Each structure stands twice: as C-alpha cells, then as structure tokens.
Length: 241
Image (cartoon, rainbow, N blue to C red):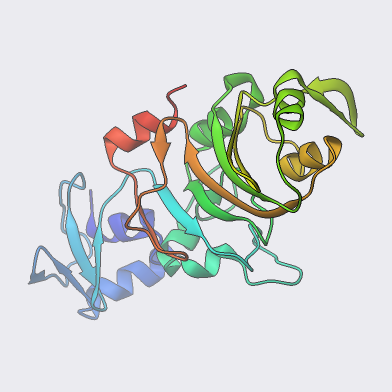
C-alpha cells in the first residue's frame, strides 16, 4: 500500500494533504524519514510518525473511552463539550464510504453519565453492538436519591412500563450494592432508560456510571477523558453475551 494512501486511510487529511505531508518530510516510518509518497509498505502492523505524532495502522478503528461527566456524545453538541474533542484529529477524520467521517460513538450516554463508551468506524460492528436484537449486556452502577429496597429491585427485574412503550422493560440483572446504590444490567438502550426505570419504581438517579459492555469491564487504567484502542481479545469480549 502506498504511503500516502496509508496516511489517508488513517485520517491524516485528504489525498493532497497526505501527499504533501510525505513530500515535505513530515513522515517517518519505523524511525526512518520517508519523502516518497508512493513508497509501498505492508500496512498491517506498520508504525509511523506524522509531525511527531506516533501512530500504528489500523484497518478499522475500535476504541474504548472513559466518558467524563459534562460531555455530550454528539458531533454537534448543544450545551456541553463533545466527547469527540477528547480524540486526536485523525480519529475524527478517518474516511468512510457509508457513514460520516471519523469514528462514531456506539450508543449515547447523557452528559452527566460517566463510564465506558465504545467508538468505531466499522458500520457492521456499530449496528451489531447497538441493535437491541443482539442483546449485548451493558452494566450500570447507579446511585439513587432514596434508599433501594427489595420491592424496587423485584419490580426492575419483573419489568416496568415506560411512557413511550406499553411493553414492560426488564433489567437483565439487578442487585442492590448499598443503601443508595444498585448495579443494573440492560440489554437494550432506550432514551434515558435507567433514569426512567428508576423513576417508574419510585426512586431517582443521582449518579450513573457504565462499568461494563458484554463481558469486558471499563479498563481500570483509563481515567475520565482517556481512550485507547481495543485489543483483539477485548473486541471479542465486548460482543460476548
């Protein structure tokens, strides 16, 4: 694969910009300067540097982000900073044939909700992870305004009716973890679902954190606002029921 095409595929600009980056000496490959944009390299596993920024080739992007409070999962936020500002420019500019450029958040977390968020530019993966038909479990740590009791836990497991759907919505799992806290597992993602489910049983969410998707927990080393690439093993785990 020609070097300028590699840069383009990774989101370093349009084709003309990528040609110029190489020709003007802004690119090194495995530590060696390269000024021929048509030089060919095996992309898989290739490591290179653009203007001092280290990068490794990924044919598709699969990321995990620790979403901080006070951010929106939107490209065009209305009141709070976008989560996409936490990512380097190449990840926001990766070309894609069927969706808008860059990686996309898989599902959304409210601005005051923290925790695990996946992003990708793989349309099939995004659909599979977001579709309620695939029942990918998502685990939430909930802090409540009022004490949690056994009746509330039972009702959440049996199902509650929300105002936009006559069919009961059930938690896949629900455990009280403290007087004012519980762990809730959902396999679908309705709008404000956790908050509305707690309201339906007579309580209110004071704090909400997503701690797990599939069988993969939020990596403990990721601080709020930090991201990293998923490993192949982690990628398999997030889709595991």
